Length: 421
Image (tube, rainbow, N blue to C red; front, top):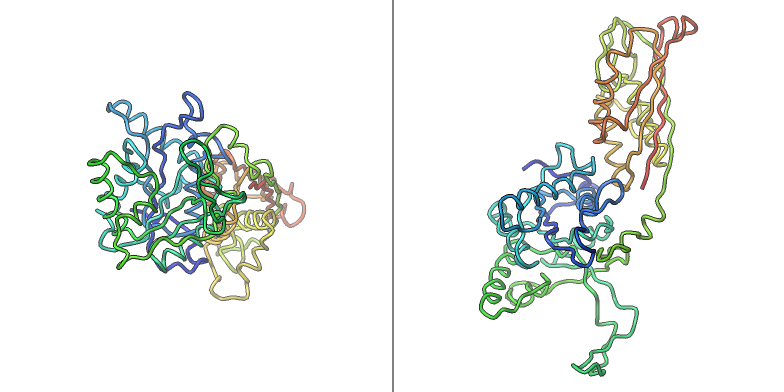
């Protein structure tokens, strides 16, 4: 399994983690022919947004995505293709760092979780990592919520986010009369992700499956299964951490019009760089070596185009500039690969929730001619940023034999970008 990602260093992660994202339901309350996890959202889908939130928060050994079960091979193939399309609709999830497992679900949520746990236990049971179980219809969770459940589960072995009810709660009898007055401070509505040690939650699910087959009673919540089928002398009860009102589960069409969507933020950024051209150096533009007698002089590899792009992205996200990130006074950046520098910056920017709208660049270079290499350069930049080539464009101008550009003494670049979140 390839590494899944990303910002675990920022969270000080030590535990191994695996992830289950459930998208096996029928979405009956959304209307005929509509599967809520596959609805468009934030440049991807509801499902891709849910998966992406985890990959930008922690490192996962693997991600298991559960899609709907079908009775025929043809329907099954259609289901997995629809699920894969929904996940990979976000260009962030198309990178080589992401390679999720897709598993057919069961007739109930419990069965779907158990099938995923069976696969994960086969692969990782000996390591007993933390397993995150999340509803694919909850796309609005943030890194802090993920971190809270991670920290609590690392300590106790089982954790879930929950919200205390705002209204006073009552228990009713079968006729609709108040039966019992409940204490609001002792109540909560639990959300996902629900996080457990893999071995005990898998064994608890096996016991729950056995009881369900004998009694017909099923379970819709993993914390209930944990409490009923793990030994309290060995394992802690489930720790509840603060949930988030934004971490709602999409149930009806109108739920997609969230406050977060209505307050989408758009920013532009401008980057600029200029380097002297000298013999004995490679001419690097956009991560591509351009055949030339002269190349950029610089502390790093001198790729002026990638430097301008890096500054444009940092400016749009208000996260600094390339000189602050990679000071030229530090020897470790000597002859550094500018692709690595841009990739490092972009990882930090995307971890803040930013996505690329488009990138437009201009190169001022007298020679060699840039046009034959433009497509290769665009593809190189798109690969670094994990976006579509169509989101990147590069134009070239000459100095018309005027000034240091026209005399072939320097190369100059500008980059402008649009970021959204």
